[in-house]
Amino acid sequence: MAMLEHILNLNMMAHRELLKLINNLLWIMIGCALFQMEAMAQFALTNQTKEPQPVAKNIGSISELNGVTRVVREKPLKSEVGFSLDSMDKLETAAGRMGVTFRDETTIKLTENSTVIVDSYIFDPNPSNSSMALNFVKGTGRFISSKSKGIKKENIKIRAGNSATVGIRGTDLTLTVKDTGEVLVILLPDEFGESSGEIIVTTALGSVVLNKPYQATTVYNLESVPSNPIILDLTLDQIDNYLIVSPPEEKQLETNESSATASSSILDTDFLDFDELEQDDLAKDDLEYQELDIDYLATNFLEDLLDVIQEVDELSKASGALAKQGLEGTSIGYDSDTQISSFVTDSEVKLIREVEGKLQIQVSKDSSTAIRIDQEGKVNQVRVNGGTQSYINIKQGS
Image 1 (cartoon, rainbow, N blue to C red):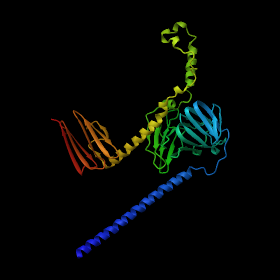
Image 2 (cartoon, rainbow, N blue to C red):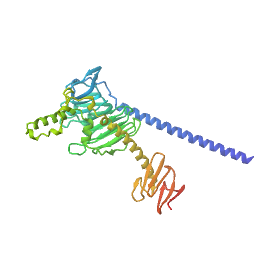
Image 3 (cartoon, rainbow, N blue to C red):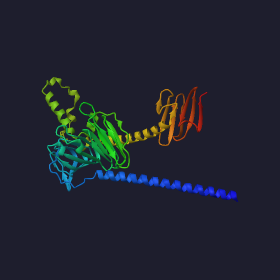
Image 4 (tube, rainbow, N blue to C red):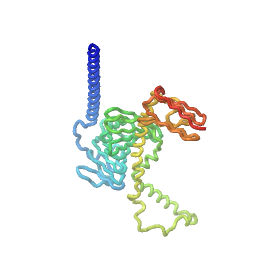
């Protein structure tokens, strides 16, 4: 009887301790949720305009235009080169592209299916009194701040949809915002190939700094931390090609060059190079930018790049978590010494070795496993997280 009472008392004590633990965990969860809500609220308040700003007139104009575009100001308006813009205007492109130059000579260039709202714009001869606020709602655009009479960088506010803000300390960057809210930001170099400055990408839960040419970060949504910055293997010419607005100018240049050489001797002409009969005189003017000229692969390039960077960031986090605990005996990726390729995902570690036969093994990323691989007399010892819980011995060969 005494033993039964003792067991009951132990069970009651354990039950009370369990309730305490559950209670503490609940309070921790509530605290984390409140902290996240407070951070999101602060982020939202920070990015709200405190007072309605009066509409500013003639803040800039459309400097380049191709394809289907429009300006929405209470109602859709026909866009054309030279069209005068006001603050609160919404710039939209469909199967077209648009370039805008503001009064301070800051420019933005938009690719197909993009939307930017000019939240506010104040221009003053004194740059300290000038300010600009833009919202890149969706699509891809390039932002190039003025170098002469530009607005002070701290007075420029850029929102990337509802996911992030970009603090400007640089002069040249691209922004891609997908319909799902994901964001890609790339800092571009100056004319000397050096960093054009520094930009800070911020969400409700954190921020990262970009300060090297072609350094990029991605954001999933407002409630995520921006990914670790990586440097992309790109060139400014590639970026220009993806964001070019006026291809006809290049065709015009080619035409002018042809005219300039037309005065040379007729004997210099190789009539085998072209067939006059193949030319269609009824076709549209060669200088006209037609819908077929739009390179949709280029338009989607930066969105595809965003997906790739996010995948790389996830793998990097998984690899980093494993590296802290330890992958011994081989390296993550391809190891030329062991000839083993190691891949890390959120849930597993995969080892592949193809030398006189293929070997592949997968173990849990959270396991503590020792693996001995013997292929044709070549022995490799690999440990995942110390290798103290499980032991695997693999032998291949005669």
